[in-house]
View (cartoon, rainbow, N blue to C red):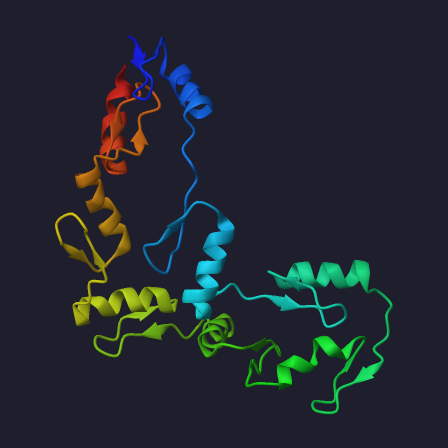
Amino acid sequence: MIFLCSECNKVFQSYKHLKEHKRQDHPVPKQYNCKWCTNTFNCSSDLRKHVQRNHPDHQPQTYLCDWCGRTFRCRASLMKHMQHIHAGKTPRDLCSICGKTFLNIKFHLPIHSEQYYECSHCGQQFKWRKSFIKHLQVHNADKPLSCSICDKAFKDKVSIHRHMRTHTGETPWTCKYCGRSFSRRWNYIQHLRLHTGAKPYVCEVCGEAFTHNVTKKKHAEQHKDT
């Protein structure tokens, strides 16, 4: 059995060699998908700029070091930074607004220049109300979000927003080829493959490609008996 490269027509004796050839000679540019809309980008920096500009309420929460102004994506990284870089340092600047003390107050003062939302459970502060509300769910894990129409409960706002479309009939994703619209992004992506012919799921045994993963799994069952 031979395997033909669809890009350059080279022939290989095994699917493994064909796959390695495609990886080296015909690499597919990595794409970064925005999970809040249908835009895609070729580099992560463009995606970050897009989120900052178009979805400010969904930016990853950051943790600010009050000593030097560095920001971190998780609290554990901030604590590790504090232990290694600022261990043993003593606060010297007193904030006249909130009474807290800091090694360098200039990184703290901006939080008083505009409205911020402070968590009463842990003291973490948020510029955006949506980020603050989402954070509160961490402390209220036993209080799931409920649908006001049918009382179904959900663990996060993304899930309840998706569910609400079943009541409102909202279909934000529209196919540019046929005009059909969808309430779920994943269903929209799967539908697009009918027009583009994309087959991203490849059998590891024989190299046959499929449009849907479930079809590939059913196909793979055939190889278990051989």
